Image 1 (spheres, rainbow over the protein chains, first blue to last red):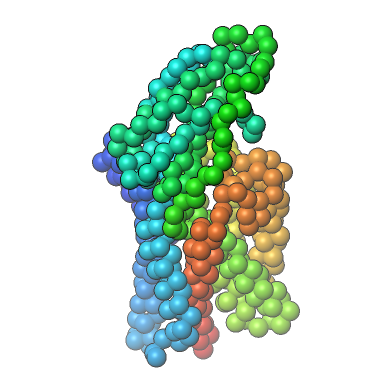
Image 2 (cartoon, rainbow over the protein chains, first blue to last red; image 1 turned 90 degrees about the horizontal axis):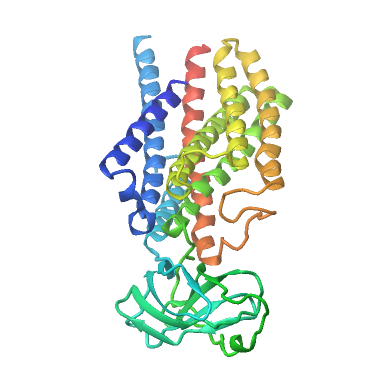
Length: 69
Length: 350
């Protein structure tokens, strides 16, 4: 469950950052809204990163467990 | 190679790279973003200033323009004058008498040249009839709307409002398709687990389901971002959105269910049967109910299946590979989870 909370919090931060620096989404609407496509790709990328990060952490725990045995 | 099954994992990466590069660099076709004025009286002679998108008005040899009333009647522009590649001014003599009797008539603007092909702006001009007492079509028959050009090269379709976000077909829509395939794989393993009792099937089923749920959450968030810039809100009461959200909640409950029980066999059995139930709930929620009503989604309404007017062959060139790539990448991620769970089981079950 932590994953989703973390993911949603990060998304909100990213979106607010985008909205703040662009004056309410004007930047994302420019050039035929191409930057909203970029934002979508970035979300997928960030999501996969979070997945890898969490898996890495789990594997480290497992490794430590083996080491301590 | 040290990476097991490297060929399908790497082909997933390469196909997705092809989708990102090709899907972002191929231009869209030409379109009309703005036109002034928006309304006129019948009998006026008006000069419309039009702003194009991805157009080549100056480079094109011959720009032609029409105002179209319906499938039968149109008038041709008197004078077309390009001031830049994207700006053009068009003069129309709007006839006094229309072949219709309603007071206000919406006209569609059509522009055509040999580089950009023909493109339209629907409801571009609203004409108020000064005399709507009788209809006459004699001034509307000399439009000679024929010999339209085709746009040159491979280009994505231009849609008003959607503009460049039509490229989200390769990411947002493909995510949902890939999610569904991954859920089917998860369902297969859940059934196999219930049939054979082999615990490895439970590991595979839960891993594929987890990646599919992750894709579903990506799908909701990417759709939400896109909606902000096309529908101007993060969430609407669109049936498709709400039903998908319900389906995702059912699947989130699957994760909660798996986390809630520490008994190994019980957890596997309950979650396998629950995932069958969740999949059966998903089908009406995502495929049946949204089709019974209209949706704000482009290309929806009726029974679009894998088509409709909005998915043309240039989009298919990237849409289908994108689904394949996301399935391969998802299977790779599920594969990592499966191997992790197997290792964990081996260590803790000793």
